[in-house]
Image (cartoon, rainbow, N blue to C red):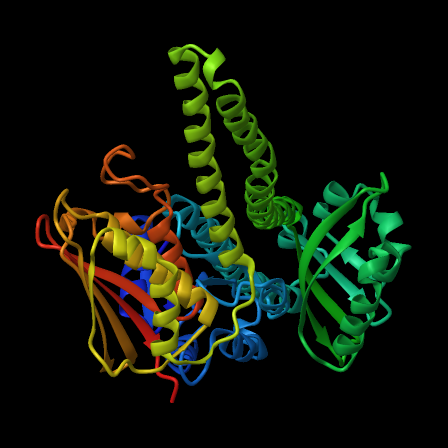
Length: 519
C-alpha cells in the first residue's frame, strides 16, 4: 500500500522539526501545517491517518481547529493527538477529549512512546484503507460478474426454454421469482448453499428467509423491483439448519412478465473476514485508550510518591542531627561521620523530591498569563539569592529598560531564580561570577537574556541539559539535583514560550527566554 499521510500542525519550526525527526523512522508521508487554517486546507486535499496538533497557535488555536475538523463528515473520525506543553489542566484535557482527541501528549516527548502511538493509528488507517480497497474491488468484480451473468441469463431465457443447461449448470445461484418474492425457478446451487429442497424453496418467499435485522431493507428492495429498478443487496438468509449465510444478489425486474431475474452469490467467507478485521480495529482502539489511562496514572503516581517520601526523609534528618547534637561526645569519629552522611544524604534526597514536586506541580497547575513587569520580578529574584551574591562577591549587571512580558509571575520567578543560581554556581574556583541580564524585542515577542562567565557547556549538550536528571559534572564538584533546567524548560513551554542556550566550554553561557508580546 502507499504511504499513510501524517499531518503535523504547529506554528513553531523547532517543535515541527523535532516531531519530524521522531516520526520520520515510520517511513510515512509527513505533511506540515504552520497554522490551523493551513491544516484545514491540507485536510481538503488529502486523507490523513492521524493529526498531531499543537494547542497554542496564533489566530486559531488547536481546539478551534479540532472543532472545525470534526464538523466535516470526511474528517469527523480522523484521530487527533494534541502534542503540547500548555493547557494541560484537567479542564483543558477534558476539552480536548470532548473534541474527539484520542490522546493528549505533553512535551518533552518520549520518542518511542510517540512513535508507538502514531504507529497504531497509521496501521489502523492502512487496515481501513485496505478494507475499503478490497471491498471496492470485490464490489466491482461482483457487480461486473453479476451484470455479465445476468445479461447471459436474460438472453438465454429469451431464446430457450425456462429450464436450460446454463440455468442447471451455473455455479452461482440463479432464480426467477414473481413480484411477491416467491421463487418460480432456481438452479441446484440454491439447495447446495441453503440446504432446502427445490420444493421447500418455492414454498417460501425471500421475506421469510431473511434475517430479522435485514427485514425492512429487503422489503424496500422488493418495492424498488416492483417499480422497475434493478437492485443489488447484501443480506443474511436462514439455512435449513437455522444458521445464517450472507448472500449478495443482483435482481432485474421485467414488468411485462411480472418476473424478477435473480443472480446471487455466497459471500459468507468475505463477511467473516471483514468481521475479524473489525474486531482487530476495536482491539487497537482499546489499546490506545489503555495507554491514555496509563499516562494519567503515571503522572499521579509521580506526584504522590514525591510528596509522601518527604516526611520520612525529614524525620531521618532530624533524628541524625539530634544524634550529632546530643551525643556528639559519646560517638566515635566513624559514628559521627556516618551520622553526618545520613544528614547530607537526607538533605540531598529532600532537595531532589522538592524539585520533582515542583516539576509535577508545574505540569499540572493552571497557569493564567498576564502582563508582568520584569523589573519588579527580577528585583524579587535578586533579593532571594542576595546572600549567595554577597558571599561570592558576584557582579550583577542589568541593562535597562527591561521590557514587560506576557507570563505567569510565580513561574517566571522560579525560572529566573534557577538560571541566576546556576550562573552563580557553575564558575571556576576562585573566579568572581559576572551575570548580565537584558531584554530585546523580537518578531514573536520579547526575548530575555541571562549571560554568565561560568564554565560553559559543550554544544553537544545544549539540548540534553534541559532534560530531567541531566548532569554534566559530579555532585561533589557542583551540587544539585539535575532538575533545575528541566523546570526552566517546562515552565517556558507551559507559558507558550521557549528556552535555549548559546555556550561553549570555558566561555560562559547565554540562556535566552522567549515570551509572547503582552501587546
